Length: 186
Image 1 (cartoon, rainbow, N blue to C red):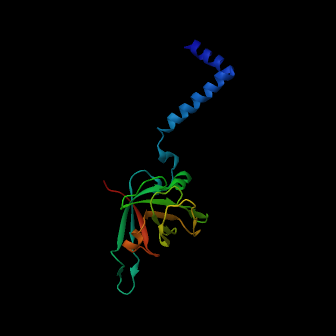
Image 2: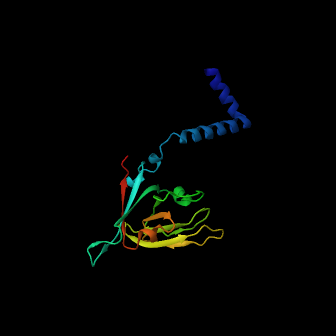
Image 3: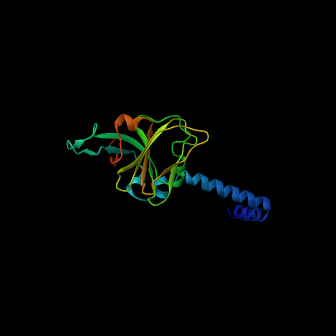
């Protein structure tokens, strides 16, 4: 065993051996990264924990009747984008989104945020929420594009929910509606 170790040390003294050692080290780190849980890297509030999440949007109350407007709620199974890489990628490159699925972006209030449709293959609606999980903006029917406009959101934005285009209109989602995030029961 000792002779193999000393041979490795001698090989590393040669420039070609150093290059091979660095390549093996990167390969080893890459292989190890597959076995590290993503939640260990993104430790934080419960919203970042692994598992299937459900967003329930509750309609604001109709003051004249004391009841929720419309059917009262909308339920989506969500994928959470809580880090810079997942927020940047978003839904780009995907062919479609199931009707009851969505992507929930966890944003940093006070930090400027913008969305665009780069590399998107289907239109979406985006609902923006503040830190109290109250809808503050609804962007409808954002289309895939080649020269993409940028959609800026309020610096109060803490969450954004991307859903299939037309669903905000169909469900009747509007400013003032609130959402809750729940663990999906299996």
